[in-house]
Image (cartoon, rainbow, N blue to C red):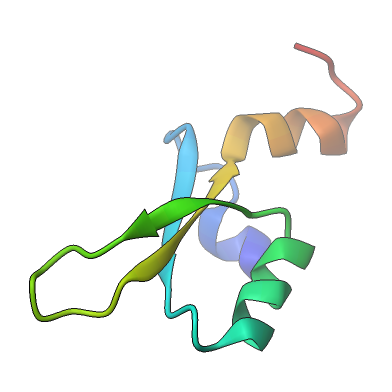
Length: 68
């Protein structure tokens, strides 16, 4: 399902904001190749989310056996 949602996208990165209280969700995203790069509180009254990134074109190159 993940590939059908983000596969073939022109953007360089997929970005997630994940509630750090949900460690199992964060671990699942890490299994999918996302890396936590920091924390972000987008609004004063929002949680302090974990920011997770997935380089889309690098993931495609790895799947195809290409190198950058």
